[in-house]
Image (tube, rainbow over all chains, first blue to last red; front, side):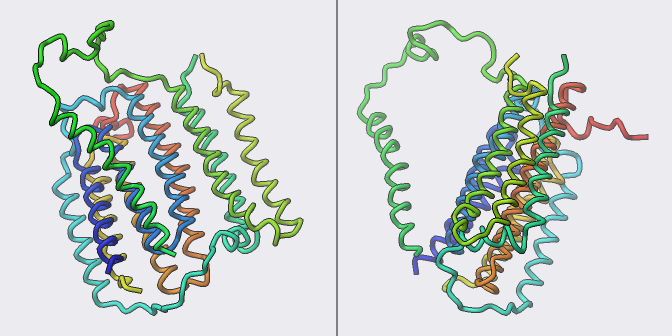
Length: 163
Length: 118
Length: 103
């Protein structure tokens, strides 16, 4: 009975942190709450027995993406003033759209039946992922490196201080 | 398999609880007689000037950017390296191509001076 | 498996909707990007949950999640570079004031 308790604990943590991310006024605090939400998602991956993915989540999201976001916030000083409003003029419409979409998704999920199996997860997914990356998924693998190259070059051109 | 993570959970609880316990005990036991000098940021040191929320240089962002790209390269190369014994020469060529494409990005960043502190 | 698949899907749906609210309602461009990150995480939870419950022998779900994370990193890198460039030239990151293309 421990697993459902852990699941509910981490789910509430993820959703609570996510709510703080979208409502906090101070962007720097929002970035820290985002880190909390991302750690919670990593814990959900461990509950799903996708351990490699949990480590990848912490490496890429917490280690890399959250770092980039924190750096970008520190680079633009204006947005850290705490007296400005956090939400724009369309926040009511946005909230209504989000709630309606959630209601629709819950309606669909409650009616659908999924072809679930009870097979155990493979004990070690990492060699399988390695093999798939250079056989079935070799094109996405190489395209990912091209995408990262283009992203890096583009971001350097855009963000560089001009002399 | 999940039970192994119990140890990480215990470690996390202890790691969070230990400093909190120390702070709470110190807060409970310490005498509280504040005065303006004790309350200042540096009790013995230079007064800070200006706001703590200063603007940082865009150079930091470029370093973080290069770090992110090679962080993701690690994520892709790790499962490849674990499975390396079961893979052939073709897999080596594919991974070498992957690394070379990203190396071109590093060369570009280097040539553009993004890695130099101005 | 003690936890039903639907629980994961509902948590992912809630996370997606919170991210959607963030992307729609934030004034700050970086806040919008954070909302998009939450939505991408919700999609990843779905992919991994379906991998575990429907096809645990195939690694497609995990591989897709890794590629989603890679694309998210590239997207954030370029998006934040744009935010920094806009901040430098216009001194704001408020999306309501960035209206150069308005006719």
